[in-house]
Length: 134
Image (cartoon, rainbow, N blue to C red):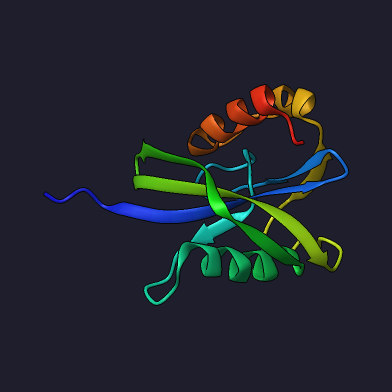
């Protein structure tokens, strides 16, 4: 049987030395875990277009997405394999609002260890802890 691969994108949104992280809602997969906001890439979209759309839907903000991929990870969950591509982003307009998450937080790279992240997000978390946000 063909492995189902779900292609998703995540935003590493950096503002004044802090990174925006979002907590998943209870009662759904990966409940209460933290993640970089984002979502699935639709058929007609590039990854960066998908990320801009998802961030508007989830947080009601506009972001500029860097050209370069920050991290790409594959993780086999029970519901299918997720291929997560993260990009560093800058906030262009708006203040983040909770549309699809329980909570959001702005954290420094050193504070990332205090949160339980979805497994697919962990390689990007580890990279941020090493590289920082400059």
